[in-house]
Length: 307
Ligand code: DON
Figure 1 (cartoon, rainbow, N blue to C red):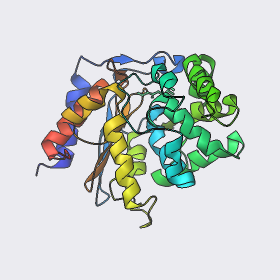
Figure 2: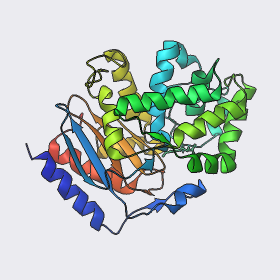
Figure 3: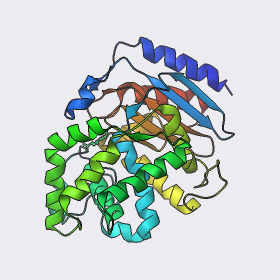
Figure 4: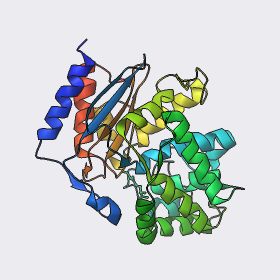
């Protein structure tokens, strides 16, 4: 077995030197300022040791990676009733697509496309003030990452609120079918804010450890979710975590993973490691270009593919 610290260092050096860096997302104006030359990686192994490289301590906008954690919270609140509000099939469409919603009566294909994640946020919001729901999500991230400093980048949230017309369209459309129960503005406000949580690779890899250990949080020894639920969240990450690039990610990397347009990818090597990579340049499907290549190198060298 190769030495993980060496593998992580070599991957960091290769990624820092590459010229092909993808394109930084600019549809959320505040994200367009991020330096495309950044690359960070953190790997938390089963015994808790962390191997990190590059810009692993630099904060970035976790964006859609937050959807793994909101899904976990919503399942904890209403269990399998969640699947009446959102499906669990890959969409084969871009993350912000609206086309399937009309044919499928406002029920989004899965909890990771924007429509599905907005529906999940609406479940977390139910019966709460938006501030309370957001506090719940943020405290969950702080607890899992063992870091009370994790916070929301208000500039990113405000930037998306000003320009998130597609997400507004998705939310109002779902509202017309009764899939969104709260005022659309409230649901979107919470959604934009949880997407704007800022974390670094080390915090994110730490936060995801429960999905490596059958639902158990190694910091406490207690389960965050049952083993069965952890397996299922991982299954949805594998099939839907990279939108219409999910097949290619499974083919190349072979791990459950979730991307965000901030350029982060969180990935799970079951029983072995929790991984976070970050490079802001994206490919055509909106997933981190170098992040995916780095994960491909890591799984190949460590033999961590689930297949
Ligand atoms: O709603 C949006 O468009 C963003 N807040 C999140 C999208 C995202 O991260 C897609 N992932 N690659």
